[in-house]
View 1: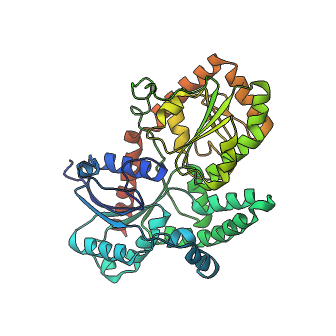
View 2: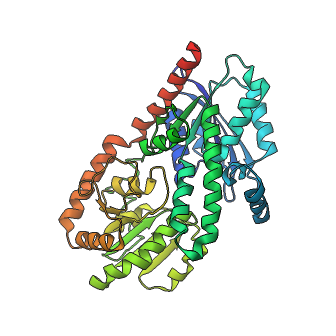
View 3: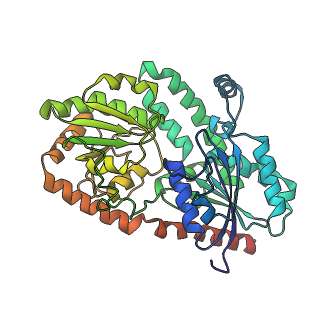
Length: 425
């Protein structure tokens, strides 16, 4: 450990291990690579199913780990606050007096250089620290760093714009309209009251700058474990998942609205066009907690909902083409990086690959209408050489730009920059 390493308190909305979904994957890899040079303490919530076992690798990377059970909010409470609270749903999701008190205890007991807030659900604790007189009077005061995993207001705006055109989704559209307005105000307030902001892409940074002109977010993208997602590894090639040779695979947490919308749009608008030309094609939806809106797909013989799987890599490895038909969302998608790292051919919407400096026909293929998406997938299914070429270029792309070893120093540079600003001020 470097002698000039910082003491960092990291706040996360769930236990970062095992890294089964986007937030946990980002938080765990940040912790692993920061721990090589800094002293880390972790304060986090335990969500349903989380368990901090004595052999967790988190203990190798964190000198201190504190956990509290995540609070539960009823639907009635959410409806009430949606109607009457000025705060967005995400700012209320993890409101906990016990967590706030434990955070205060840690600040009193330890000397930190940085308090790092992972995601907007944890941002209220950063705002509380900023307003707490005892924190303000610390000398030196720890830097408050907000790692914004998505430009959340933009995500809700896009959900609204997609859902408002469909009468059966008007209730969801109204919810997203309200959250979009509230998140715009809340994200603005957060960015104005922390010392440093990290965004996962230039697109997200630009979106935050629309809220706060003059803001200078550090670009700290999502990354991928290049060794773990190497298609040549024995684990990625293990034979317990056998897919149809013409399989199309989508991966993601399946109670997340943008993923649900993407799968339904693809299954209803794109897949029938593909199967008209190639009847044997199957669509695999790989991810935990499939939403009830997907239940209609369970009766179809051309779609498989896997639910939770221990390892997504065999499914990615077995795909002829990975599809990313997202029509709403923000940030940078780990599903893109995982498929690229495994040298897979990808067809994505423009939004699905937003935030990556990729080009249609170079690292992946891009299509935005049902007709174009279907034609592009069919072209790849019929052209193994093109699939292989795209896969090779995609793998080189993530090797060059998206290894965690290359990404985490960008977060460390944010600490140094903001500390310099504080010292000069």
